[in-house]
Image (cartoon, rainbow, N blue to C red; front, side):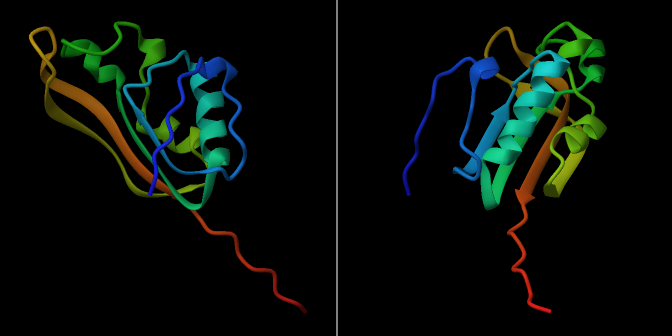
Length: 128
């Protein structure tokens, strides 16, 4: 197995359809329009049977602090995850609160959405 990384502006990201086995989006807080487009491209980029893993803050994070963007437009609801990642079958899609400890300025209870989705293999055509 090999790992290829890419450093790119997500607004310019043009992945080849069916080119990757795994997409991981952790704390990828983008404006809603750009996020929806990046999510659509991520699903398209997955090979059949490929997996997408996501964790992001929900709007409830604004009441908890610390961590996450302080702007509601950059946060996401589980329902939006499901809509934006249309084409995946979710093994996990839930909102939860969990403790995050990422250094001095980022410890505390956090409101997050977690998702693990799999792109379904293409069905073979059957002759009639």
